[in-house]
Image 1: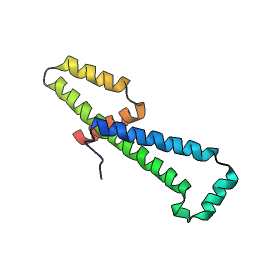
Image 2: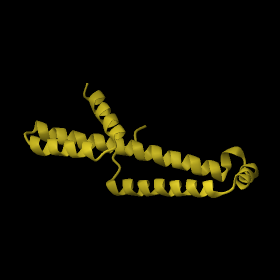
Image 3: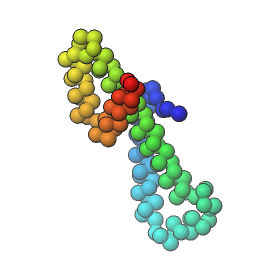
Image 4: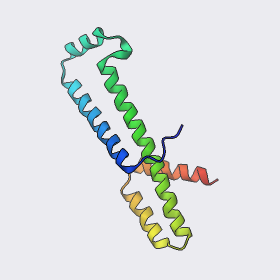
Length: 119
């Protein structure tokens, strides 16, 4: 299943959620090993606070990365359409801007997805 067409404001909220999970992880790391062990022993393996924070952060990261990649593909498609429709300068500027302001791994994944979809 794809996670597509996410509004920019929702991406901002998702980024904030990722940040909050990171803060939770940092706070958990500040708790002594002894107390963290007791916390693990208190709850069942899949229902510990430790596990919930870890899984929540992983889920938020995956959703954010998936949405960024698909939104980036959409933006690349729009820019390429501008180039093909005779507004090449603006389209190329947009492509260069996306490339310069995007994590290289996300950009590469988006270009690969766009390339696979064009075949």
